[in-house]
Image (cartoon, rainbow, N blue to C red; front, side, top):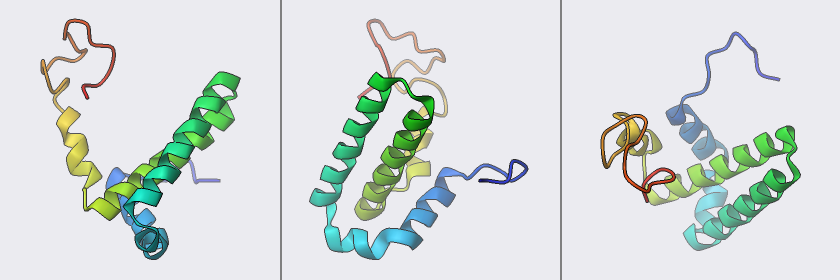
Length: 108
C-alpha cells in the first residue's frame, strides 16, 4: 500500500515508471498489438462499471491508464504536454465548466 504522506505520482513520473518497467517488451509488441491490449482493458473497465464495484473500477482505470501510457511511450507522446491542452479549461470555448452548446464531455 502506498504511503499516505508520499506526494502523488505525477503524469511524467508515471510515464517514466511505465517506460522503465515495460518499454523493452512494449517495443517488441509494437503499437498495433498494444492498442488491442488497451481496448481490451477499456472493455474490462466497461464491465466493472456495469457491476458497480468501486475497487474493481479503480483497478481497471489504472490498467487503462497504464496501457494508454504505454501507447504514448511507443508513439513518442509526452502525456504531461498533451494534458496541457486542458489546463485553461475547455480547449474549444476556454471556459470551466465548459459552455459549448451540446457538448457532453471532453472534445474529440
